[in-house]
Image (cartoon, rainbow, N blue to C red; front, top):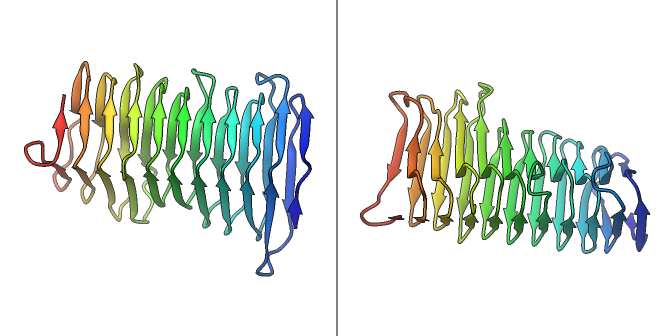
Amino acid sequence: LTYDSGSESATGVELAIAQESNDGGAEAIVDNVIDGTDKSASGTGIVRSGNKADLTISGGSVANVSAGITSSTTGTTLTITDVTLTALGSGHGVKQTGDDGALVIDAVDVTGDASSTQGVQVTSTSDVDVRNSTIDKADIGVDADDAKTNFNVSNTTITASNSFGVQITDGDGGSDATTFRVNDGSRIDQAGGTAGIDIATLGSTAGTAVAIDAITVENAPIGIRLAAASNGDAVDITNSTIANTTTAGLQFTQTIDIGVTVNFNSFENNEVG
């Protein structure tokens, strides 16, 4: 199934894509344009529900709605590529809540309301890959919220976040090992906010690994903040630049448990302003 409606105009309504059971096929939304008239309304541009069919959203745009794309489908892959999500309200650019699947965001541009928008928000056990994208004027650019997952952000630029460029929360005590990566030329330019990367809670009983490599964090009060970690967690920061911070390049805000490994080689691999 390919859905290509050309253009939709709505005020606070939802375009719902309900999917049937997956027989090995896939579905697509191609070059669709959704333009609301009031981003303060409660509407979402594309709502993915149902289950068991992979979905690709490619081309087109969503604008002037509270939230861009929401998916609650479980056990499938959602791929979003070459899509522009602009003039969003207090919702999110892309939100994934369905478990045991995959989310791929490639060459997607998200612009929020400079106050409360979540650029990309994941609250599920999905594998996540955000790459080659831009996120501007969100409250949190990428919010990995209790996501027991392999989570990767690469070659992505996050600017002017109200709170955090990236926030990692893995704190509900689950048993799955989790790996978060922010790498490959990603750039976080806060121009204010709280911290470029906030490692808020690491709490998987199997251990959580955070790998930050070859990125730039600048113009934030705190470059990278480690708020809490538990025995078996590891944070590795290499080949990166943290510049123009007003409080700290790297900050520990709580006592870190014995058994937590933090590697920050500032003499050979990293530059701290």
